[in-house]
Picture 1: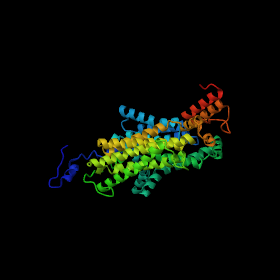
Picture 2 (picture 1 turned 180 degrees about the vertical axis):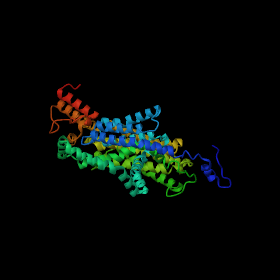
Picture 3 (picture 1 turned 135 degrees about the horizontal axis):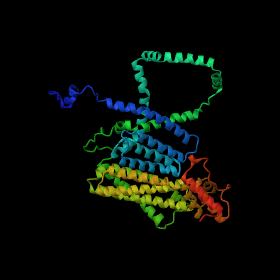
Picture 4 (picture 1 turned 120 degrees about the vertical axis):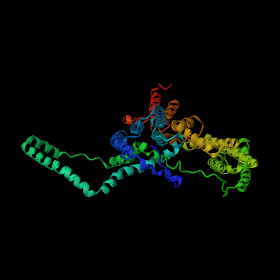
Length: 498
């Protein structure tokens, strides 16, 4: 079809006359509307089926492997409604992403594994919608708010159209269409009941039947499932909404605005910071590494405990300042050297925090908070080293933030597979520390085999109650970590543990 150009008007509207020679027999919006109309019944059927499946798998059971099965069913529902199906490459990525996102739930249902599942499934769903790789993170963040808004539009849209067409017209159509069938049908039913005593007996039994209505909590659970499931099933229709904002953001290039952080303040701050940090680094070298005794009245445990956490916060603030001031450091070799020196001192500061924490743990043992602090310190130290690498190589902040995000996500994913309670019990019972028996006995199921092995070796009873791991009531509550704990505990108690 030849394009019709309207001369003498601005270029931005020259092609607005396409409708003058367009084919009126084939409206442009007809195909999408027909496709949406054909997909609506299937979406409603899948919605009901997934609500029933969620009720069977999740309602009134301890979260276990059934939660992973339900999440996998959600992904399959989204794939089933994708127009044209899923190709081989996309199917492989969806299957791999779903596997990685749900396996921590199979290991153990905990807040961390649930967070990984939500984030991972969000990315998988926007992949099914057709979002490109560079926009996956942005689209995954928008998925659930956009999905809830889409559900509200799908709910109230037909009601709005119905009211616009006129309530009186709709009621008159219903009367004309159903008055005769229902009126005469009811009359025929009454006549047949008079002529058939068996049918009357059946009717009497039906009137005595009292249906059991679902409890209020169960209905609320169904209602909470509806927006989640509908968002998943609508993901292919929300592609443009999920991409919204990515192409509209214009990057304005120009000179950096001078605020509180400017070349002068950056130079003076780096000099002051390096001086202050040098004093702290020197003290750590003297008291932690030099073997010099602490002043009277201060123990190594107190020195370690008071300094471990504040120093990590200090290092985080230092890293944030290093990111904000790099625009002024790029063209100044002296400032660049001062920044690298300061970041290096922060790395040494975090290492000294690790040493302080290890000194404290050697006396008082491990806890969940102390173990989490050790992991967090390692992450902070690695991030500071990456800042040093960024400054040396001259990379931008985007390069750094992407790698820091990948590092944090990787560490969290690995942590979802580690039984920290077992590690805490193993360390505290194998080292000469001050045992907090009450704390050890309150640890989760993963610690029970370790405590049982300690009792069997020492021929004693650490806790007032014997070590035990709860058995799931049915397969829906099964978890791989608890299964391992039960297997190990049974082997220890029967004397077959190697």
